Length: 69
Image (tube, rainbow, N blue to C red):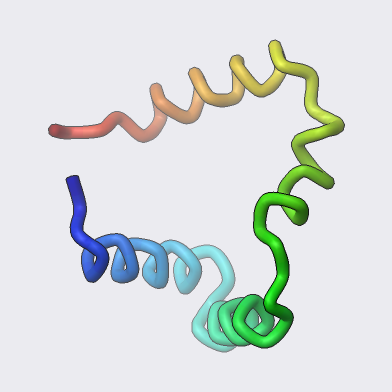
């Protein structure tokens, strides 16, 4: 299992890879500033995804990104 520092490092690297440095910083500052409820925010997306669609996407993601324990 990853410790907090490792998770933060992985997270920021993912954000930078996908968004670039400037947009990654903007994303983080928006989350901090808005004090939003992450669960409610994500439900806006996931409430519209059928369980089978979510399941298939999770399987595909796991195949593309295997965990090495």
